[in-house]
Image 1 (cartoon, one colour):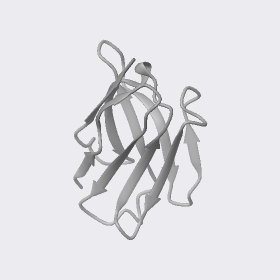
Image 2 (cartoon, rainbow, N blue to C red):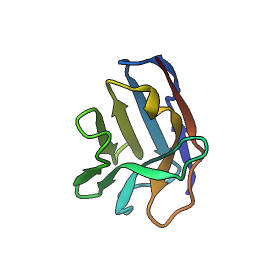
Image 3 (tube, rainbow, N blue to C red):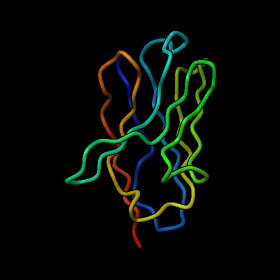
Image 4 (cartoon, rainbow, N blue to C red):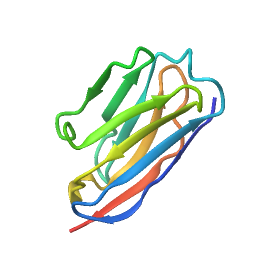
Length: 111
């Protein structure tokens, strides 16, 4: 499967972005999908994940600001990011359990 992430960009602090991850195959059978991020010099870490039963888990640092969702009809997972902070600056990667990482999308938040 190929995971195509999009929606990153440059935004001012307090702004919003919506990331999309389009899969090349049906995601109905993919149990866990989500988003990870990696800032320069840091390890890749979980941002948010969502199961095929729609249960969600968020990293403590984004809870209340970010919302993950999935549209199985469109084979797409979304990450709505609000109240962005400069420390959210990173490359955001789409994740699908059991499949290779997709390419990342850069998110840059200016102060």
